[in-house]
Length: 74
Image (cartoon, rainbow, N blue to C red; front, side, top):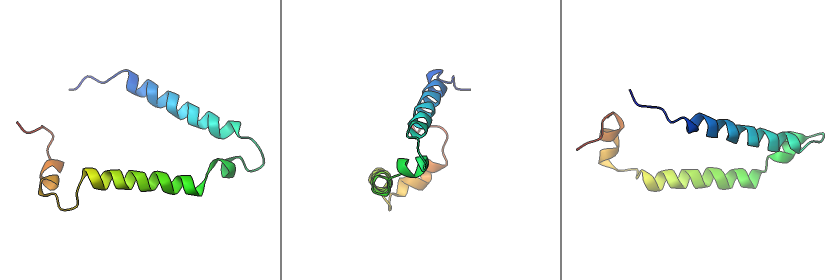
């Protein structure tokens, strides 16, 4: 069994707390609607999609072979 990194859950908790604080601190009648921006959403989704398409080409024959492996090849 792999040893789990102790700072991963701490970092996730701090990150989620900061995001929640940012949303809540922008108080008003429509606090969540003022936090969400459609253009920013498109930039993030477009960037993530582009990064995934660059990292994993569509016609990569090794992609399906590597997907089922739990141990790295030697």
